[in-house]
Length: 414
Image (cartoon, rainbow, N blue to C red; front, side):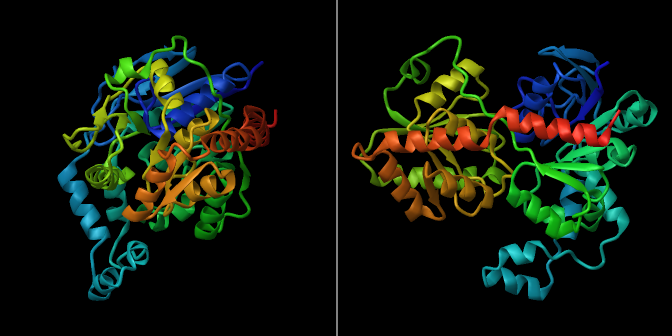
């Protein structure tokens, strides 16, 4: 008899393109032939509002049973902003730190007058606030042998992992950000019976932050396939242009570094004679500049995504915070080099260890990266070979599934 596994995640669906949510779906689909897999999630597609766009129901996605629960309240932006302002309240010495450029240090300082209600309000107002999901777990957790929680940050994990920690595995997808320094997260990282990290740098960061060295853990990462599209479509037909292009895939959001990306690309186009484009795939949560060379496609089918990725000159990742960056690894699997933000430790490790891309930390280094990758004299074949080798040696499904099975057996040995 197969062990029964529940994945708990804040969003889930074929239309959901968030990194952690996509990661969760890939893992659930890979494990469904080994275990009896179900998913517990919300009715939301949009993480900025948590609006109930799916029906609250039990449905099936790629052969996996998915339970959807209603968000009891939309994100109250005004109240959430007020809580954030209190949590980030500036003292005179903190303002000085900002003026001195010590922003990272400033963001790690939590005001001393913050109380438990402030943290509770932050969790609720941030959302997704789904008490029905948590109540379902309280009543039905005994049905499951193992509970796997994706992403440390949200209400379903924060409240759900308290219910049966002895059978819980956390996939934290953690990185250095303000919220992770809230005191209650130290307890959360010490709560589950097992933690599976995406990278060694993530594990080191969480261990140092929470002191959870005694919790069973492993570096599981994820397996990456360079699957082929069912239909090959000419990119010129999709884009209506023959320009070479940079490709961005993911949530189009200020928090993902997209404002910086747009500013840098706009500046580059003004001074460069190269006929290049910036292609965006993903749901926009910010204004997109209306200028020649920037093409936003929104959500696209997997076939179109793969065709565009395979034929891109490079993938660009401007994000400051990533715990793994699936899209970076997928790009490398197809032999496409990556231009990444050097201020993100995980992205920097991928580029430094693979020798399959370029790092930027300001406009000048961004310009150098684009000048190099779009130069016909650049040895793209070596970059492509390095990228594929890095994936083959480090991100295979055999290794990932082995670590998940070991953790599941540790948590539920029967």
